[in-house]
Length: 338
Image (cartoon, rainbow, N blue to C red; front, side, top):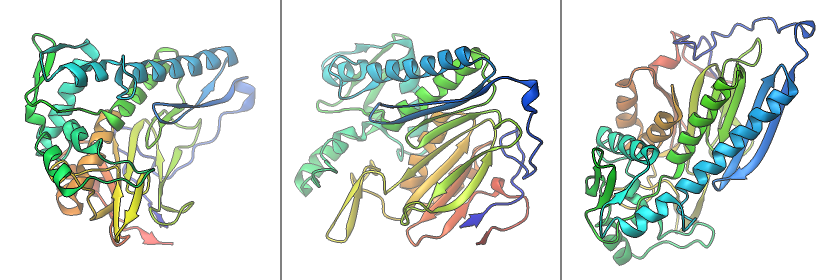
């Protein structure tokens, strides 16, 4: 495992390795509260400190309510969701959007442009052809037909009119983890409004921490992609978002090739040069989108992108199991394997 020491303390995001004394129990009658639910097809977890247990329970309920609300709006599996309505109607006429969806699609297009299409929510035309539980992959002919429908520039977003349309019949979009990052951002905003100063909200591979763990940083491990239960790095964090994308989440192996849910929009296939990517940044939309970008771009191009983005850092495990990290994570010391 890599132990990362002397993490850069930038904008309060990283602990410098110093553990501050815990608050005295006599100063507060509060406590830690936690709740877990399955929403948006993933595990949702919230842990927070509340001085008043009733306040804490209300905050947990508010977070789970927001997760359910985002799921109702952005699930591709719910026929009455806004996302399903877009996929059903946008090829025939412009579809009116909620302000929330309009802003989210605009952010998605921004990341697509930034990454030259490595992040592209129109990948769904290809993504729907895979079934990882049933070990189903598309034929070469089916893949070629679907790839012709992938391309973020064919997602015509009119921010003035508040509409979206598809330039090609058969196009689809899937917000996937992007919606989860959005939900986590919303949930932490709700917690702050309710006066919560110490919390972590997680939705699958996306997490955001508020404050610290009352005197010490939150510690989040970067999973070893090939050895379940083991970590390649431990990150002490404060006030930051973190997302991990890995080829071990939903996949099947066939003919020596790992087919996983992270798809290169340009090829319609799973990239193989990287096993996992972890991104740290100010918000969940950024971490989620950039984790997908770097996974598709690979180590060299991916790190070049990360180094160009202020306030963003990355930990990458490549296909050989080697660890790569952005310069912002370390002051001077190089991590040593323990």
